[in-house]
Image 1 (tube, one colour):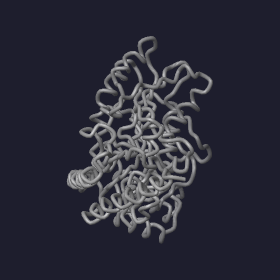
Image 2 (tube, helix red, strand yellow):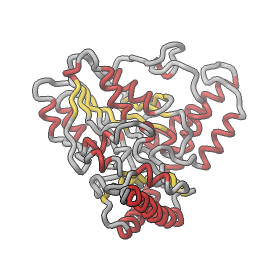
Image 3 (cartoon, one colour):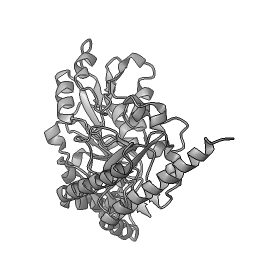
Length: 383
């Protein structure tokens, strides 16, 4: 099996797997005061520092969650105030879009969606218009799109938002551990992430909240008051330790991995487009994640192509939308037709992708396209 669905979940890094296994052999609630509890708390503190080092922030600015979906919901719930604009884009992950719609349900006029170009870039010039009548509020824009890999210029977005008195949140789920992201340099107020996107375990993530941000505690979960009142519940010690180990491993080889994965992605695109000249790569090609390519094969249903190459794990789009009756909201927002959106496959690579997998996938795509096109031609033939 050649795995090309890192944007859904990356294979767990060996360092993270080893850390999780070791942690699960120990006992201790990190909130307990006895020795096993204190040992668990110490290991959580180590993981908090490892993740903070990856983001260039203070460990005290990290809140552990069950993943980016919870972190996004927590961030928007805390930062949005009725009557102030909540500015986002139509190509955000559903974890942001649906959360934004939920928190503004009683104030629908507060929700502002910035336009998106055919290249997948959010029109950041429209931020000035979004704050023309009102100051303050929240801007929530993803650092990197999960379907196209297109990057948002967070420096420009943050500068414009702060000049308007607004806070800035970014869903950086796809960028963390794949490209450098420095929250201090970017001047970001809130950032969400999930461990399993950069080689950590599933079911654990974090929310970065900049120290001094004027945010009330509006927890989604109440109870024991863990994570300084932001997120009640017993800490997932093994998951957190695994995330810390993955963060440390990613930080050690960030630049090297990004360069290698970019070269592999470009090789895959070259092999596919050289064999299938009618296909089209979506999104701004010079401003995207190293390991993502989103390719439309006009007139050929993506689900049929994927079914015809069972030894290649790729995706029609966001994993959370698999099986949905509607095509990608991201591609539709970029201006693709429904037919083209239904004929699009996302290949996402990562730290463990090999040259052999690239060659195998390219050949598999060619065979699958030949097979599906032949089936379509037969179905459309004389009756």
